[in-house]
Amino acid sequence: RIVYVNGDYLPEEEAKVSVFDRGFLFADAVYEVTSILDGKIIAFDGHAKRLKRSLDELQMQNPISTEDLLEVHHQLVKRNELTEGMIYLQISRGNPGDRDFAFPSEDVTPTIVLFTQTANLLNNPKVATGMKVISVDDQRWARRDIKTTQLLFPSMAKMMAKAAGVDDAWMVEDGHVTEGSSNNAYIVKDGKIITRNLGHEILHGITRAAVLAYAEAAQMQIEERPFTIDEAKKADEAFITSASTFVMPVVEIDGVALGDGKPGKSSLRLREIYLEESL
Ligand code: PDD
Image 1 (cartoon, helix red, strand yellow):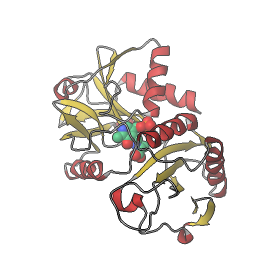
Image 2: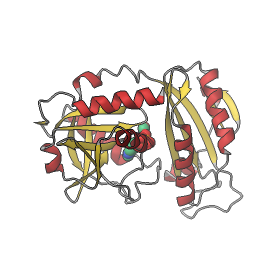
Image 3: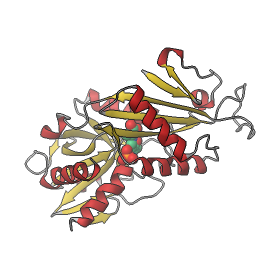
């Protein structure tokens, strides 16, 4: 694989980042995951905009212009002959030379890393069966709207799901669902799509924004508000969205089957619309 590190395209074995990098020591880093379908970059502008917002919220310098960033994406797709999969991008505050909690002075250059990952996104076998989830207590920090690389709790939640023999975990705070381990969560009741409103509690999903816009254009009803895990278990259907899963049906929560236990109509329709519009 050819990866990108601080301006250079290198074979992955030759790519190096310092052990003093704050991304490594403090998870002082932000990231984006953008999907590639048919060699095409999906929703680049949305990801670039959110990246900028994450950097601003953490007062981190942006080491690359949006134009150059798009070119790096194109180069990585080309150099790796990537037709379907993801591009991972990470910017960390860089290497101040020592371990110190305080942010370093402005002359420390951020570290930027991008790499590709091949994946079968379109023909994901989970679409046919739907995903099963369990609920877990949301133990992440309170600024989930910033896309940082502090992902230990979501990893642990994913392991709890695995141990329970299911696909993912929906995180719950004060009885209300925030989001999935790495995706936004939705339920459908009486034809209405319900998903948590934006705030510091959840990541502002790029796929979420697109899907809600398409749902509105298709005259589907939308309610953006917190919903409880109990309300979710009584829903007709449920689904998640993310750059790597698009729209993915959820058919079971904590062992409770939703509707007839099969992927819901609205979920499948939204997946179809999203892919039609994105491709
Ligand atoms: N995760 N919520 C969380 C906590 C996420 O980590 C993600 C994305 C989303 C969906 O956002 P988007 O639609 O912009 O991908 C919601 C990526 C895919 C990841 O960490 O791999």
